[in-house]
Amino acid sequence: MDREPEDLQFLGIAGIVGEAFKILRSFAKLLGALTLTLILPLCFAILGHHLVSKYLLNEIHLNETFYQAGTPAGKRTMKELTWEWTQLFAFLAAYEVFVFAFSLLCTAAVVYTVASIYTGKEISYGRVLSIVPRVWKRLMVTFLWFFSIGFAYYVAFVSVFVLLIITVRLNDLNSALFIFGLILITAVFFCGYVYITMVWHLACVISVLEDKYGLGALRKSKDLIKGNRITAPLLDILYLIFAGIIGWFFGYAVLHGHRHGVGSAGRGAYGTVLVGLLCFVHLMGLLTQSVFYFVCKSYHHESIDKSSLSDHLEVYLGDYEPLKSSNIQLEDLHASV
Image (spheres, helix red, strand yellow):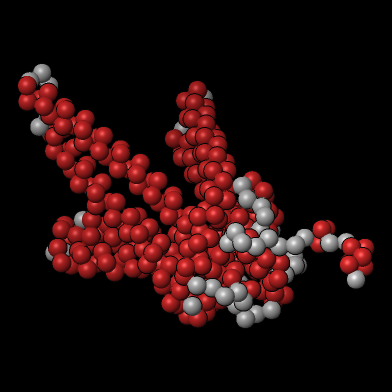
């Protein structure tokens, strides 16, 4: 980023995406290597797990179709069904853990890279990978807080939904009023969920670039977003739109391609292209998150001291500890002269 810190506050959606493209063009080799190492496995798992899940569900459906209770064959089928359901749940659990881990790793690597570029620090592929495990721990704490808040929010939504159903039945209200109430509650829930998600995304950047993480990072993120409450959700929605289109087309051309006349070679080609596109979208999403952090800092006129940020980044390497101004007294300086 070649802009002055005070100029970043004027960047809108197009400006933020433009800055992300500039970073991608200028450091294509490094970001490409990080993409192949971290983002590609993540995107391959996100799209590819549908194929495995579909295969296991088809096997389960086939056995359920021919299941006959009370017969020797039925007992064998029941054992097979139990084993297939176990395989499915084990696979989905492993998938969630894998996606969770690699999502945090990708975030740590890209955010650290953008911050290093901003401060003018020497950056390399090996250097980035060496700090990822240390930053990952801070991101995990932030995610757990986000998950707890999101879960509580979801429980509140379900409670209100159940309360709406009970109210409609007890008061014999018409279905039109129920549908209106359901749409209103869903809309409020969606807006709230988008807000919580965008706070978490910025909190991930804060967890890497500042001393705060966990609940402290979420609070700082909430404060930084003020004044950019249109830009923040639009960035998230843009990412979700592009990722959603890729996911839909993967389902159409790869997962159910045989229904639409797509052969095995075509499905493989489509799958390869779509995984590559999802990698690009995910990388751009992380780059725009990082740039958006600096935009928010500039908007609130918070100092973006490149020297202090550089010192903070050095701490992750484990061989440097920045001096704090409180540790250096003027009297000590005079005494040493």
